Each structure stands twice: as C-alpha cells, then as structure tokens.
Image (cartoon, rainbow, N blue to C red; front, side, top):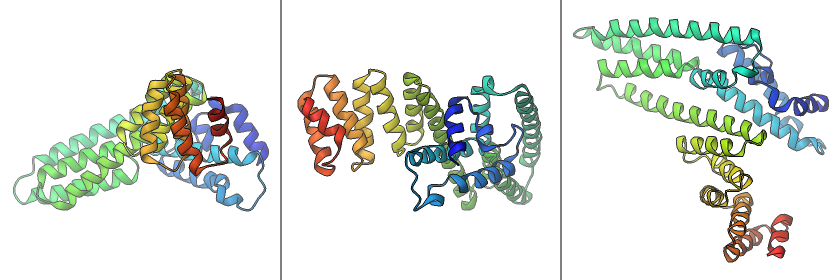
Length: 295
C-alpha cells in the first residue's frame, strides 16, 4: 500500500480519473461504480483504523478524496463530458478514440430519445396520462444510469403531458437539485486539480463557481480563500474566508486565512482579533501563536 501511495504521489497531476480508478475511457456507469467501490474499500481511512500510518495517514486520506471526486465526476454524464473536454490533452490516443466513440453514441441515443419524446407529446386524450407515465419511467431509468440530462428532459416532457401529477413535479425538483450538486462537485474537482498544480487564480475561479452552484459547500469557500491568499489577493481571501467561517465556525483554517489576509492588508487589529478567537478554541495552534507573536 505504501508503494501504491508513493506511486500515486509521484504521478500526481499526470493521472487521469480513468487511470486513478483503473478503468478505460469507454467504461460504462456500472464499470465505473464497481471500480470505485473496489478501490474505495482499500483507501477508506476506516479500513486502516487502529494502524500506525505515520506520514502515510494524510496521503491515504488525500487519495481517498481524489477517488471520491473522480467517481462523482465520471458517474454523471454531463460532468464526465466536461471532464473529457478539459483533459483531452492528458488522454492517450486510444482513450481519445474511446471518448469520441462514446460521445457519438451518446448523441445518437439523445437524438432517438428526443424523437420518442416528441412522438409521445402528440398523444391525445386520456392516452396522454399513459404517455406521461412512460416518460416518467424513462426518466427514472436514465437517472439510475447517471444520464441526468436525459432524465431531466424526459421528466419535463412528462410534466407537460400531466402537469397536475405531484410525483412528476417532485422528481423533477429532485433531479435538478442533484444536477446542481453534480455540477458543483465537478467544479470542485477541477478546482482541486488546479490548486495542486499551483494555478491559484484559475483554482480560485473554479472554487468560486462550485460555491455559486452550491452555497453550502464549505470546501469551495475555504479553497477559494486559500487560493486567493496564495495568489496575493488578500481582499478576496478575506471575503471567501469569512464565508467559510459562516459555514463552519469551529474550523480554525478559515480564521487563520482571515488573520493572514488582514495582516497582508495592514489591518493588524482585525488580524489580532481573529487570532484571539482562534486561540480561544484552539490554544495549542502553533501557526496562530507564531503569527500573533509576530504581530
């Protein structure tokens, strides 16, 4: 396991999500899920509970999170397509060919599904309720395969045929929330990649995009604050750190960023105040104590 972790660290940002999960670029949803479940069992921190991990503890946690991020992106058709487009340069010739073939198949399937929906939309009388039921079932099937765009299109058509059915309305609301969360997770994964590569400004923009999609995403607010500070943008760092504090008042990380940002803007009194609050809850925080002493 140590060798595997060292190899992952060495390969780092050159790894594609497909390579990380150990699958090919033409893998379907079921293959992606199986690969994730197999690997996540080995990488999950609970699998190593009670073991003395030493310096490998944080590394194990890091790659478990990367695995989860890869699965979240690749298990959703929309975020997967965006990932493939953004990382085409990392894919091998064989992988690019597989992606192109899969995209052609997806476009053809969408065309056929669209034609089916259009035919059902012309249904008259009581038959419209039966057509709505078929479209609803089609939406459920698409959602189970991670084809959320198709699922939403089908459920919207079902709603048009049967606007009074609460089950359809509820499912549409659920799918749209899932879509927003999936997009946020995709943006978050992209942000982490850019941060790992030291592309601070791009990472901050991606974290910001993730937060706009999900305003409760603490990791996005904290990531934006962290990258803004690295990008020598203390004003933005303080804004994002304040949002992170609102979401998780007990975590010292955003308070420390706030203190550093205020220090960079020569607002020493506010920096001391943040550090005092941090140290009141975390009296042994070495970095906070050092910064307060320097002030």
